[in-house]
Amino acid sequence: MSEPSITISERAARRIAELLRGEPGDALFRVSVEGGGCSGFQYRFDLVSERAPDDLLIEHDGARVVVDPVSLELVQGSEIDFEDELIGAQFKVKNPNVTASCGCGTSFSI
Image (cartoon, rainbow, N blue to C red):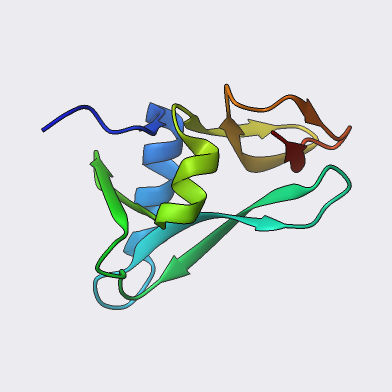
């Protein structure tokens, strides 16, 4: 099997694993892309209880992340990271496909 087309940083894996431990059952962390935001697309992060048959599943140090095929095309080659700073904590997607993004870093265009 080839390497996953999305990687998860150690910080993100630790935070995702923490979140999943607090959820009932076999929870998963879903990363998706939807239309919206000031640049055209925005990332969405959700805790879900099941995966679709065509989802990509990435497992790393207790983190279980799923991505649907449409979103996968837009985040191919990305790294999911987690930043915890004085101004706040958030997941960040380091996406090599992005051609422009907004000032707040939550929306992008390709």
